[in-house]
Length: 412
Image 1 (cartoon, rainbow, N blue to C red):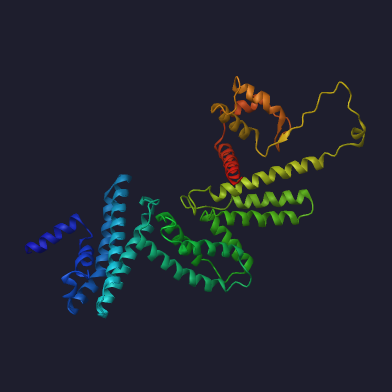
Image 2: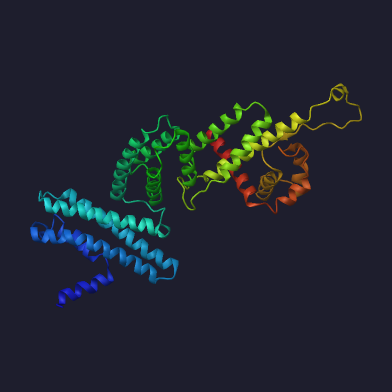
């Protein structure tokens, strides 16, 4: 073994991407002499070595991950490989763009090299996605490559969609979302690795659907997929709750309406969602928002059923109030439970937004004027007590209500 070969192998042990880096930075760099002196024999050798290098690197990554025990060490290793490959891909595509050579063999090397780097990135993103920095911004060249891939796959899916005999409104929502992502200028919207990987998985799932199925069956499967992918688009949430509401409105009696609402709620709760998957990480999960909508609709329907089941007797209508009767308080109905209202009052008291001698005075003064879909007469003592032992679900619903209020105020 000569000194040069020994040095190369030692360097490869320290920096596993040395072969690919040398090929991109020196051999295929149009501004260096190595590029102009590349013979056909040498070019053919390099072309044949690319696939071997890819296989070697995949084995190396797996073996190095397997040798580590700590999550932070694995995360550091995966992020280093991923970021280095993204940089090399950027340089490789830039070389290809700047190269003025018409040699078909060199063009073949460029194509094989880009494909190799894309497969290595896909390998890491598929096998080790939990270790990637998903909120980091995607480099411009990598994003451009991803968008081209998305467009090609989307065009094929559009062809598949033509097999469906009736229109699919949900599919149109998907198309609008992906088209907007593809068309967005890199400077106008900072795409993250999360947003790119989400759409890669989303397209993969769409491609796997049975597009030959009957229209009604297919649309059910598409809805199940969107819940699984936590497709928390506001347009989709509005559409989904809208079609359920239309179904319920079509029923004639309150009992039929309630039966269908409860059935749809049960079916929705049984749908699975993939952990860690979300379209918009800055918005609530799809199941949380739609689940809260179901809860509010059920409470409203229960209230209607309660009033329809207890008609006021004619004798009671004829009664006149006596002078000794206490004044009836005109209560405000809040579409929240007493536990959720209590949480909001407690937070307002802690922040001194509601100023009183004590928290008990806050509840004692305000509670008699309130009612909920479940209860017309609220206990201020019970509400105060529950505000200290609130469940996570009640906290989330209270937060959601306050965020909707904030959004509405901003619109004024």
